[in-house]
Length: 316
Image 1: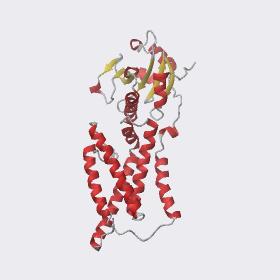
Image 2: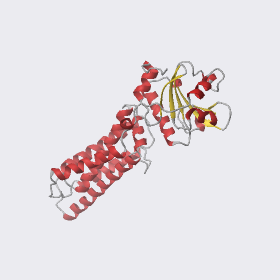
Image 3: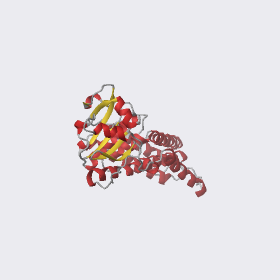
Image 4: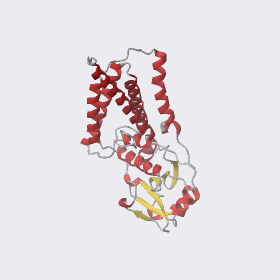
C-alpha cells in the first residue's frame, strides 16, 4: 500500500502504527509472564505434543515481539506489514477453530492481563486488521539500518524469551524425586490405607497434589490432556490430596479445583510419603515405583510408553 498523500493522514497512520507495535509488544510480554499457562493452553487442543507446545508458545511470543518492534521502528515496512497481517490472520483462524469446537475459556492472547474468550478475541483481531490497514499508509522512514544494527535487534528478543522462560524439557530432564519408599510400601500393603485401591496390581500414575498450589493445578491439566490426547485409560491416573481426616475417601469433582476425581488422604500420610513436596507424581507397576516427577519434568512420551507399551524398567 502506498503512503497517504495527505500529511495529516500520514501522521495519523504513523501514530496508529506505533500504537499497534506497542500493543504487540505488551501482548508478547504478557504471554512471557504467563508462559506456563499459555503453553498448557496450546497443548490443551490435543494437536501438538507437550514438548512441541513448549516451543510453539515461545515462537509465537518471539514473533509478536519482533513484529511489534518492527512496527514501532517503522523500517522494513513491507516485510513487517506482511508478517503482522499474516500473524493476525493466523491467530484469527486458530480462534475460529476454537469457537467451532466450543471453547469458551481465555485464549491467553493477553496473558494474565485480560481474560478474553475466542469470540471476543476474533473481534479484537478484526479491529487490529482494520487499524493495520490504515497504518500501512504511513510514510516509511528512509533510514535503512545495516545488518549489524538489525541483526542484534532480531536476536535480542529471541534470546531473551528463551532465557527468561526456557522450555521445561530443556532444563528438567528425567530424574528421581525423593520420596519415602517405606511409607509408600506400607500404605499400599495389605493393612495400608491404600489397600482397597489395589495399587499393587497393574500400572498406575499417582499424583499427590494440593488444591492451593498453582503448579498442582497445572500438573492436573497436563496429566488430563496427556490422557485425552493419547487415549490412555483414565482409571490408571489417580489423584491424592491431604485432609485433616484420618480416613481415605473419594472427593467429588465439584468440591475441588482439579479436573479429575481425587481421593482425600490423611495429611500425615501425604506428608510422610512425599516429604511435603507438591506436586509429586509416581508411575507404579505392581506396586513398585518405576519413576517419579514433579510439574516441570512431566514427560508425555515416557508416561504414554509406561501406560501403553511398558518399556520403562522397574527399579530393583
